[in-house]
Length: 420
Ligand code: UDX
Image 1: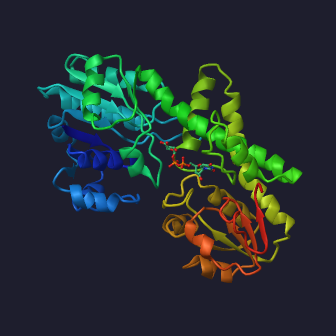
Image 2: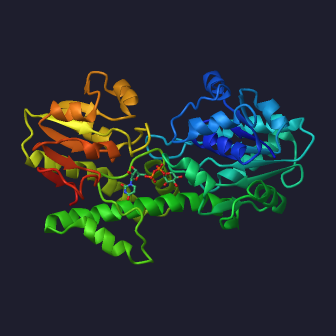
Image 3: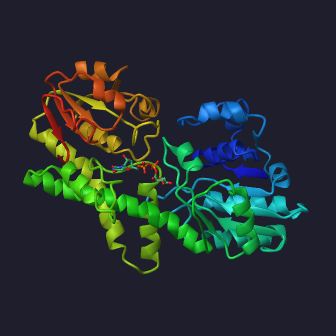
């Protein structure tokens, strides 16, 4: 099928490259000429494991990029919306990019003769896809369900394993009141064998939020249990293993530590809590999830304080919000660095992939060229991202405080975990 993907950020690019690999003809659209140039040269503008190799096989045969939205829409049967939906300072979702792209797609549809399906893949609060329909109808003068279709189809891609998640999804959610829209999207995904759940727009939008909120809740839950366990001298990891063996609970997302970060969990839980409050419902659980998460880095700082670090040099191993990504957005490591800076601590930082971004944020800080160098030059070590390469570092008898459960099984001589 001919597909265009509007917004070539993380989700857009993975979706585009994934669909191209499945044999569809894909055009990625973006306003950034630089990004378009990179994609057409077969170079991913973002880092994701396996993406560079995959792009070599599909560009330009079945994946190209352009800044010309109208032309891409004219040539496509399916148009994905994968633009960003960031949060405001108060946690409210910002939908400007969705509104803008809906308007532009509406304009492009005005002269398009054949039927096409618009698929909202960006994470949007319930009620948004209905507004996309309204805008496209108003601007194009065409009728939803007759001239064009719309479906809400959330993504569940984890950074670092996004391509695996794309090719082996647990489920596909197709939200639309319109049968033809649902059938067209099912046809696009016909090579997948996972369950396909059909729903309304709002149900699909909410499934995405509720999924992320559930996973974030599991993390804050185990972190709270972990804080209690640490205080009572109980091994949190053994407790997580024990509860995870219950099939109703499951073993995933029970790794205690300094809390969740990244571009999704903090933003999505806040957006849902904000929407609930706007609707007059007090989101008690969601707020508690965010509260525990905000506090969790302080647990590690309290442990550090108990070891009287004044005047000692601290190595920060890990800046990315998790391993296998260069993404430092909402990384707990950054809030720990900010706190330590306020106390005028002497720091040396290292991350295999996240240093470029952090150098822009904290240009005056000292960065090491390897984890071992950072450790050699410091008195105390904080592990803030679970990179595998940190497991082979020689810590000698330096104090290592582990915020990510990395060295739990083979701890160094002088070791303390945040919840264990
Ligand atoms: C998440 C969702 O998993 C994905 O489905 C969604 O579409 C986008 O958001 P991502 O943010 O890439 O993906 O990472 P994920 O692996 O889910 O981890 C999120 C955060 O939780 C990370 O900071 C991670 O370190 C933390 N985490 C995860 C824990 O602290 N403990 C765990 O047990 C699992």
